Image 1: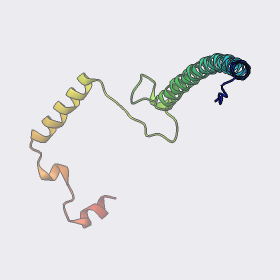
Image 2: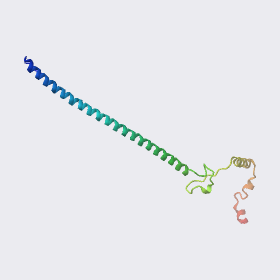
Image 3: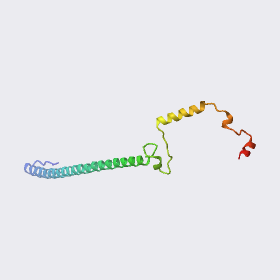
Image 4: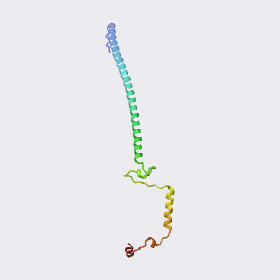
Length: 142
């Protein structure tokens, strides 16, 4: 602030000097603002560039993960590929796996009917066990 002395010419010169000083300060601030705006613009462009690269790397990572998941699923399917879930013969089932023998439905039905028939037919016990308890006759026949 200027202290006015009452002398117009002196007060005018002081005011003019103060105004010039303030104008120079304003010009300095404007230059600083312009520099900061350029920095902000540069940082935004850099941020956009890095954001784009990050998005691309995320997409690439996701594609790699998806491919690895597909390869893992394929490998698991190959490991589980045996006679129980495919048409491969049991002779090609790996040694460390249990061999699963499956029958066609018609053969299974015929076998069940045969078992039911055998269970229903009465057999004399002497035909089933001709040497029931008496081992002396068994020894003589040998």
